[in-house]
Image (tube, rainbow, N blue to C red; front, side, top):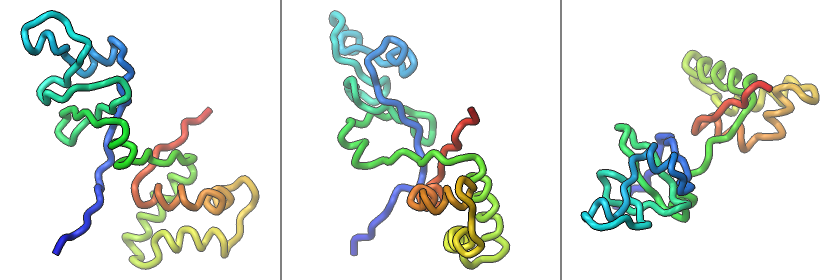
Length: 149
């Protein structure tokens, strides 16, 4: 029987723009250097032998190694973490802690309390109700906190 799995780790990724800065940062080598010939427009990720084209994504693996992924495969496989306000992140942290103490409810409790106890326009409950998909994704997968302006 085939089992179905999902990826649970978040990754860091940067889309390759062809700049010298990124070539240096990821220690990309040109095909000419690899094969002892003259310079070539083709660039390869050191250690992997994988060609990197402008638009490909360079990801950092769990052991700090770099992987190149084509743009179309990357977009089918990964989704950017939602960006949420700091007060919403604090609510998620608090609710996760409560879930450790009171092991029932979890995200349901966090969202339903917002509706049951009411909220004012512009407060945390308003954000949760109007961004429920982002809140659920942040709860399950992680998030990035918006920077203070």
